[in-house]
Length: 273
Ligand SMILES: [Zn+2]
Image 1 (cartoon, helix red, strand yellow):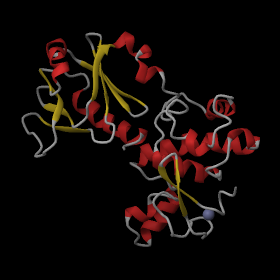
Image 2: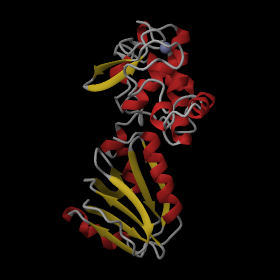
Image 3: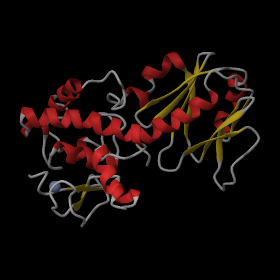
Image 4: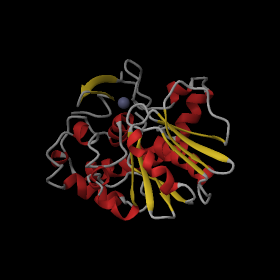
């Protein structure tokens, strides 16, 4: 499933194509939504935002299109009139004079008054967004210390969108590695120093992934590994999907475990229990 950084980059592409443009034609591929096509036709797109893994397309007539890709959804942007060759089901099409923003395969789609967004349950229950530029690491540290979260293993906590929105499976492994925190650690057992490191890594690794298009290792290291001729898959992550390979930092073999039914990777030496 795409995580916060991937969704945000998808939103950037859509925004570049349709923001500030009048939507001339709207299509909905889900029966329950077809009545909304008229309401959105002729409106202008004001913003394409994200909250966690949800994408929010705001229109100047007071409505917002909420969509969540879940496992299969995919947005594509094309020149108008040039539809991609795909077997996917078209679920939303927003056509401006020049471009089309097309959502395929997703089924978690709603149209609602923008003013109702904060109370809309899938949005209301989200924690702070890791890509929110106004969010500071001290707020994340406070959240880690909150009794609501501090007694749970970080491996479970970091998949809970109510704790922090936008973190998914690869970010979970990469953030815990960057902070040197073992997956089974509970925030209440961590030192103040470790909480600070974890809070800072939560934001810095997520933001780096957004800026680099999914690379979470430090820039200098990624450059060096690339120069050694390693493929992107080998220099993208510190631990994720690197089971059996040596840690970039200490040489120890990366371990894979299952945590909250999803695969998690860590370095036993850099992240001691
Ligand atoms: Zn290591």
